[in-house]
Length: 70
Image (cartoon, rainbow, N blue to C red; front, side, top):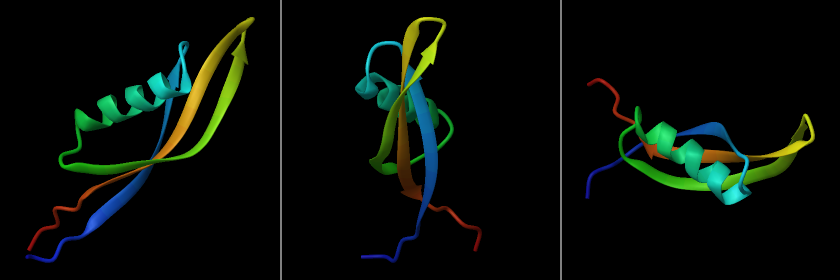
């Protein structure tokens, strides 16, 4: 088994439907540019009230394999 290093970043996703959809939106967007996503941990959830509507926001810590140069 080889040694690996993982990087952790923080993302905030939003949705008009739910916190789960907000998390999914953040992960799907991140997966477009980051390879080998591993774990997503919810660190906070809130609701932004915008012009009488609700915007669900989910803050995530996402880890992915760090591909450093040798």
